[in-house]
Image 1: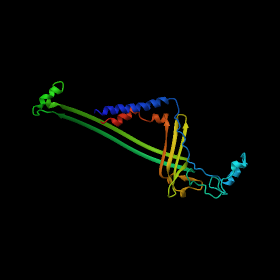
Image 2: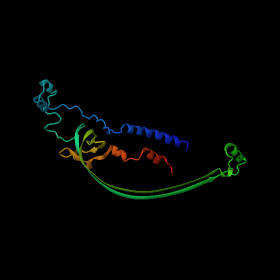
Image 3: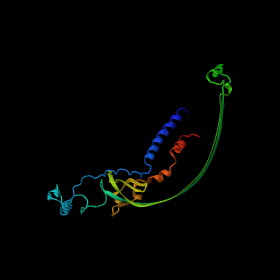
Image 4: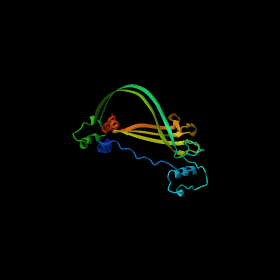
Length: 252
């Protein structure tokens, strides 16, 4: 019990810090996260692309002069290269089509009562010293007498019918030894005071990428698709921090 109170106080202080942060954001829209630096290895463009850039307005031919003798180098717009994502830094389109439906009903009733009684009627004469230690001249035969009762009734119903149909882009962040690609994509859209965030990560096979450089979410292995948000509406749907601490720490 002596450790319970400090734990509650510490949790309250930490939660209070979060409350202060929320107070600072009153009347302000949720802040978007900083864009991550894209992974883009250096690629020398082909001679054909450099010539096109020179015709578009390069100040001098030296600015577009190639550093090698190859006519077509690996890069965007190459004539003889598959334009589907295959290397670190390439971008692939992900088509997300999720249809989720679930219905759950449950009802719980719990009742619990308990009582404890204990004492020391005699202990080699040592029971006579209890009155000197404890105030109030207690009866050694009835030192402990406790009782408790608790009752809880809960009824819950969950009905979900979610459907997500959208398209987003992801970047190739790594190429595994077997040729599979690790991808990561993040998209944020803020409307008024609510921020919608979509994050997709996983592993794909280059063979599953379609001709239009797109792939379905069902073809992503170890897929992690997070669709959520933060803002005033999300805060209104959350229980107050004091209520969450009470539910987490209250033992009865």
